Length: 201
Image 1 (cartoon, rainbow, N blue to C red):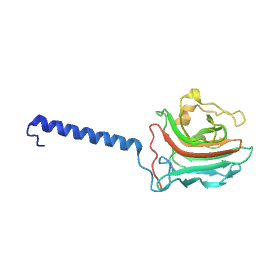
Image 2 (cartoon, one colour):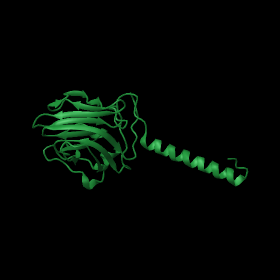
Image 3 (cartoon, rainbow, N blue to C red):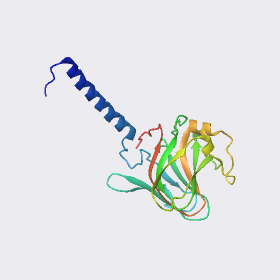
Image 4 (cartoon, rainbow, N blue to C red):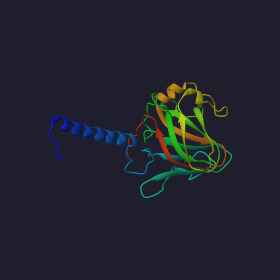
């Protein structure tokens, strides 16, 4: 159909721009995975070697299907286990999460655990702000974890940090998952509100 009138042409152009804008927004919100294995553009999912885990060290990413990956690890003992996700995909990187509401995580766990928000300025040691990651009974679930201060606490056994949660959000280097009981864990998604990890590998 031909539109000879100026108002008609303007309407078609406006409609096309709207559709293009909607597509661009949708694509930007979902992003694109990295060229090497990643989950929501997070490439470094690591068994740290702290505690009895399977695998003991290195990447825990495994193929889930032709295009997607899961991160799988088992905590094997009644002792502290540590699993790390580098938010900037390299140890030296950090992310400013001060404007982020929190993160969505798709995971399964057979026992409760905690995640620490570790800043670059206070990376070492166990004395970090934590939030509880509840057991899913082995079922795959998607849950939102807020960065609001009231949802974060400390673990007396690991110590209380000497800095506020706001400082950890300002120069966040990694999310560090810790647990003291046997646990069978799988992660299929971890999307942080307002933050798009850079692919570096």
